[in-house]
Length: 244
Image 1 (cartoon, one colour):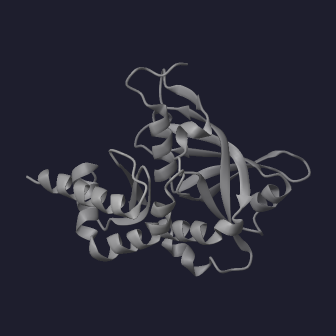
Image 2 (cartoon, helix red, strand yellow; image 1 turned 120 degrees about the vertical axis):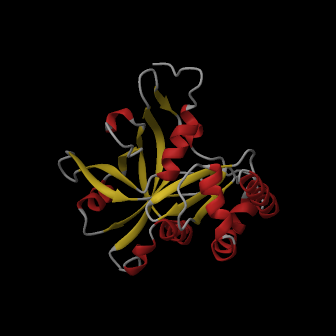
Image 3 (tube, one colour; image 1 turned 60 degrees about the vertical axis):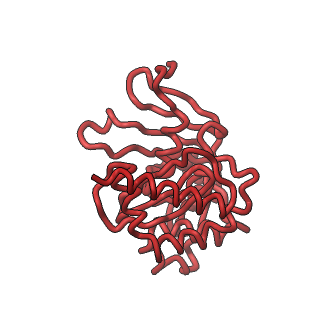
């Protein structure tokens, strides 16, 4: 089915990847190859790909170590009939963190602070799902298959921004919680709350209040710390101008 003109499937898929904190993970049973599905918590890599923290004692982890092919279903968790909300079925391979462990751990703990209590347990490990594609369902006439380049964020040329991200997140949460609340309430239409920054990338800012996550898209791409600072100041000004 082809998307209708006012529908941007890539943007919706990106939003679901950034805002989802739980998903249904499908793996293949070691030995038999039978399908196995489990509920997992997740966060997102700067490019939007899912991050998992899973125990070696779990069936799904043993399955992944035997066959890394996985599928992950994410949905909007909208009120009412869940089949009327958007969802994606992402396919790919789950890979151990390797050299990215510190990055995956930081971003995961930003999204799930309660995991701090067991992240150091020897049986827990970080994995990143490397997508090979996704199937988006968002209503009648809105069923689209997408390639990774259509729903992941291009990190090319953004090395300076990625290096500055950790400090930027800490700075926003320590000194600019008012601005975070303005972004959420005035720019995204959310209720006031204890909004904090969980990550940023060339295309936007991720924020969270409890388990409710929001995505603030930038009007244009940013690739370094200076451009990020200017963008956040600009968006704060826009948010303040909307105050009645």
